[in-house]
Image 1 (cartoon, rainbow, N blue to C red):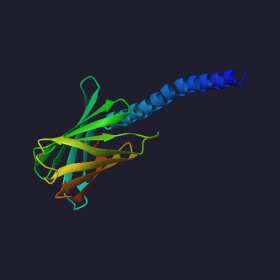
Image 2: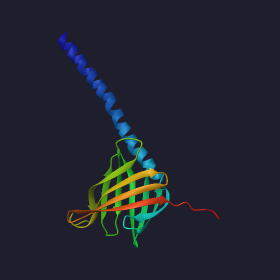
Image 3: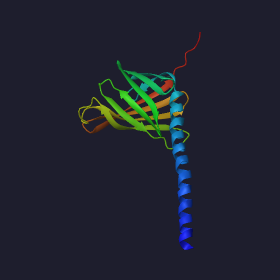
Image 4: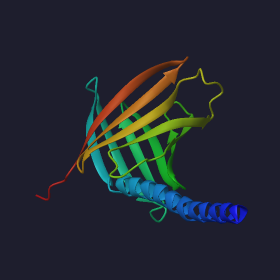
Length: 175
């Protein structure tokens, strides 16, 4: 009788796990989907300044039938492009840097509402050594629908330097 009860308990635990695990995975996936929608909502032109006062411009647009978001940043005569896309429970980022390397980063949103996305370095193409300068991290903070902050972390020879872009959506008036 005791053996029969422990088998039943074991089966009940397995059933509970079978029911709960997919729902937990689905909710994490929803966080990534929610975060991606937040990125898509940034579509348009953005202007701002770095913490040193340099002007910076950004253009953000959904592409590829809304399966990716492209951001083009202009700063000091250089142009850089970042591509964002959903992958399971995360958002992937590939940054095409003016220094001719392509860091890959990933953000795993943990909850909703999405207040910020933290993209962490996972590797890079065209980077012969980690000592060579490359973008290492990006944090996007969502203040409201018309204001964001991007905090890029640049690493060279093991030393990090942050570059902060405070951006506002540009609304064109129809005169």
